[in-house]
Image (cartoon, rainbow, N blue to C red):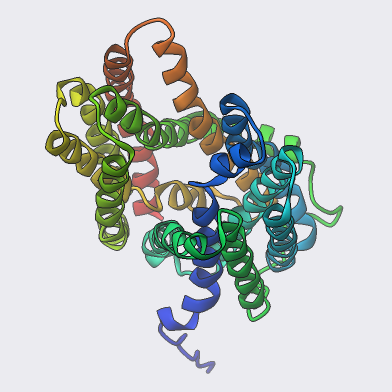
Length: 399
């Protein structure tokens, strides 16, 4: 008679440092430079439009690299991809801190964005293997929370460094944080490479995306909508604050309050997704942010703006890990990295598309009308989200 030894219970501390540490440190580095990147470009002689373009290159780098990142991770594995991404980021950030020309700062911003794409995709794949499925949402939400904590702390450390050594010191903070992330990745195990691709090697990315096009065109659209709404808040709130006459210090205070709210919500949101299903977070997230967009034109004072910001922060905080959780739920074992590249592309399309749509609407109608229009579009998508995320929850319950 064969006896089976039960598997030991999962312990969060067994993966806490390798799972969340590199992400928090890398996000700290990104958070240190995001607020000052256009300012540094201006110091180097860039006009306001060029400085804005330099700042946008971080996001452009992520967008253009996300599909190649999937192919890279499929070929060399998550751990090696993380090592390469963090190593390249350390060099790019160090060069940026020493840059004396706008074009060099722009190139390094693009490289940092591309490194970030590789890092986040590889972290996503690592977490799928490292966290048991019944704790998946909590793991992914905690990963999202680690990103938020890093982005919250990064500007504070950068401000302290800049008060001593000037704007370029922010890149020193970021470079040290990325180097620490590299050191932590060295301690990580390589998980689950067996069975990731066929005997012929990794499949081409486009072939994998075609094979999973139904998922990408349904749940992928859900992810694009969620990502667009979450990114819209970071664009429309400062514009509306300026519209009602608030100064930059007040705007910074408003965002700090929102960031603090988000930090306290990521783990409860993950718990709720694990216990009740993904739909019970996806729908409130979309409803809350969309409703706040509809109500934004009624805001005429600082307290009212704080209230709307907190509401959006609640929605955003609830969704700290939902994109990664949904991706983990539907990701195949075979050619998983390539699929995750396409999955993250859906999110990046929403991430870039939301502010671009806002910009296009503002060129035609007022900011108030644009905000209401986008909020109504978000609310109209709720039925679609209920349909497809609800189907996924039912499939998970059956399995």
